[in-house]
Structure formats: structure tokens, C-alpha cells
Image (cartoon, rainbow, N blue to C red; front, side, top):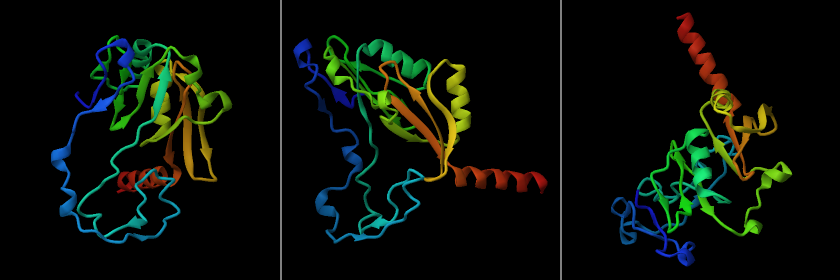
Length: 203
């Protein structure tokens, strides 16, 4: 994994630069015709965690600029933090950058969390202390994932519950530094899957 390189000394730990990853997959700007986007809004799309399907432009079929988003969490111990994300939350970490090691990007199913070790405790300000999320992850089945995490000893923020006013079923897990990460699926999506499975079973 070569997406990020940190400085070679302790003092340069925050001097982060990025290699040109996937540049070969991206059309040159001159190849993309300029056009005025046509905007509309699908009020349901945000609940499903999808790309804003109602916001379209003529160049949508040629290039997708917004690919992923990742939160940055400051942690007290990068080794322990990475171990928790790997062993408990099922993320993968190919590398820890820095001298000494201080930065990592655990990833699971295309979802990435950036972890930065710091000696300044004032930078570690998890919203979980106020019952707010630090990140929200849309998943295929929140109940199945919760069972997996509970079996591995994850720190539970709250157990699965239905949030009817925005249509999700979700739970939340805390990491070792208190960051609260919610995991949820759209209620209608799972209901549709169950109905389809029932039809196939009866057929």
C-alpha cells in the first residue's frame, strides 16, 4: 500500500504527502466537457448512504470525482488502535507509516478510517462522549454485523435499534479512544430482501 507517505523523522510525523494513486484511471480535465450541472434532490437517497443520485450533470457518465470519504481519528497508541480495528472490527491494515510509526488507514469493504497517533490529548475529542457519532457507516445488515462485533468483544455504544424518523436500523461501537462509530442499514432495503427470500422459498 503506497497511498500515503510520512516524514522520515519524529518531527515530520504530521508532514503527510500523497502519491498519485489511480491517476491513470482518471481522464484528463481537458477531456471532460464543461457543463452546468442540473440539480434535483432525492429525499430518500441520503438514508441509504448512496451518492446523491438526484444531483446530476452531463459528465456523470464519464467520470466520478467523489469516490470515498474517510474520517481522521487522533489516537493515543497507534499499535493498539490498529490491533482493535483489525482484530475486533474486521478492518485490514497493510502498513503503519512514520518513524516511529504514527499513521494508519485501516479499511474494510472499501470503508477507510484514518488513525493518527498524537501526544497532545487535547486533539483527541471523540463526539461519543456526548452520544454523537464520529462516523456513520452504511452496511448490508446491521444485526449480523453487531453479532460479529459483540462476539469479538467490541466496546458497545448502543445495541441495534430502529430510527424510524430517518428509516435506518443501527448500532454503535466505540474504539479504544472513545470515537463512536454507528453502523446502519435502511429498514426498507432489508424488508425487501426478506420478502424476496420468502417468495423464493415458497416458490
